[in-house]
Image (cartoon, rainbow, N blue to C red; front, side, top):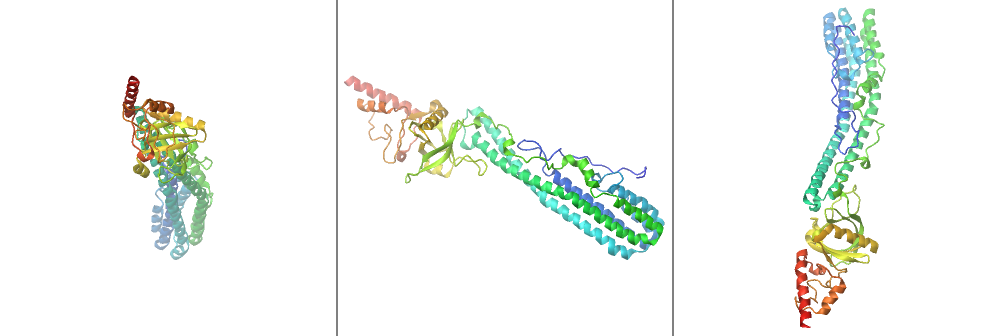
Length: 493
């Protein structure tokens, strides 16, 4: 390269160090960086081949118009290569090859040859076919890797929105004392984050595999491009160099410059300069288990108790039972899910009972009961409203654990009923719609004693056929009336 020749400009990289590094839920890196870089590299090769096509075309005209036309040939390659940063600027590479052509073409200005038809029929078609191959390769990258990059971007945006939603509602959990709707329950939202994060990781790993496949094919493809350029130059030399020994020597020097380029010379230089921006084939794929995100371990996301329970169907015509996955959350909800799988389907509660507004039955063996309104906004919740739910645990000890956890979540506002197993045709003893209920002041001492033996405290609930919400306030009003009736009976006696 001559001393007065300006160095080709290098564009500074604007990408991050690695496309998929880090264990954050939503990486800050652009998934299109590697694909865009490789697509731009193909553009550089395409323009390099276009430079050579222009050169041969101009030489064809020069042989027709003699010495003056060789000046036009020099002009076609007088400008630096486009996307020049993709090529090694030293000798021995593509940039050095074009510099060699500039020097030798200057010497050919005084030469004369007329081989227009031969050049047009042998050399140019080889380069045109190579140009089309590079364009097809670029289209493959754009339609493949860059398209999958958009899917990664979309999946990351969805995950980020759900993580932000979790942050909002965990903060709301602290400010509202944990009272919120089922859809706003941080536990439910956190499971939704995991569901979307799994989809994101799948898209990221698929995109990474696409990039690695494209990268692996680049070295062989570029070697092919260099090989075709060498073949084109051999044909060019055979046609134009035959006119005179001097002209032949000049063109042979150009050929030698092309042949001295190793097939992997430019690719190795590219890896040295831009390796940090390419996907690392040795990097382990991302895993949901290794990812952390904000509020992942917030106390509101940790269940008080969870596990599988059997529950009688709410359908009055059906006496069957069904097994579900139940959770009592710090937000004071009893949620029902189909299972504990966060990945296959979006985990949305099929049943949500707000426990401070529910009536809880003491456990009887393996069974216990809860009456409350389903707030899950599902179709069944709109049809059933307030429901009496009969549960069966695996063991009596498990039933007691569930009862204690539910009572703890419900807090002081909860009403506790007796242990019972309701049937559609027999009301709960002591309920406001019981057949044995008497007006205030007319209960016998036997009836009062019977209630005490049954262990009835607070509110009691009616049978499923007469479900009506019973609040803690009703309990407070009912107790004085019962006490007054007992005192009146004692005075009469």
